[in-house]
Length: 243
Image (tube, rainbow, N blue to C red; front, side, top):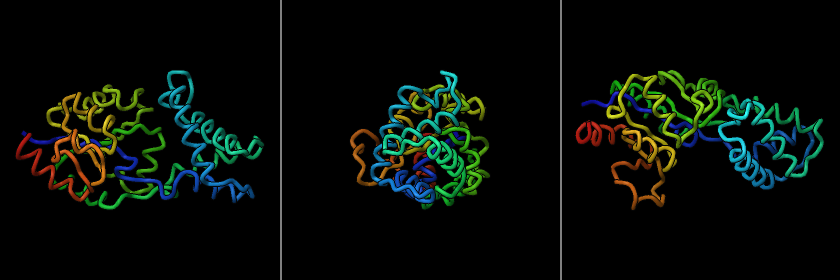
């Protein structure tokens, strides 16, 4: 049997932020003559993001929010927590950052990503995205010139559920018209990108640095240390052993 579908996580698998969030926010604040410490912004963002996702999971869709409003709230609260209280400054700043993060301005393609995508395409494998991102993701992938590799992009906003919820994987399989036994997923998060797809019946690869701490839990053939290992691993494990 043959691998027919490979789904990809995106953030920190195919693309990453060019700079930490705190530095990106600080740079935009400086353009408005605001002096805010990047480390304070980074810590504030992490706290606000974590709390907001807990209170309003998956961009607050089930509570009547839009992802746009969700992100404006996160950015605004990040600056408030960092000591910037003037709404006349914060609101347009939040909107500008929201729009800029739609483009490749703040993102870069990870080393080996383009080659891995092309290598998988050369094997005749259908590819798609499964990501806990909002609707801006397609535009970001287009800006990074990666969108042409995928049959579809399924975000948690579109799916109405977020990894590790198994529902998002079932939706992707349905869209692709492929059974889980002929499918695999790759990403960098153990729970969301490795364990969850396996529970659906898919094969999964975990992208993890060699210093990662999950070696005892995962068969070595399932761990990818860099994307240049992916195509040979697919050929070795999936084609010869599993499929």
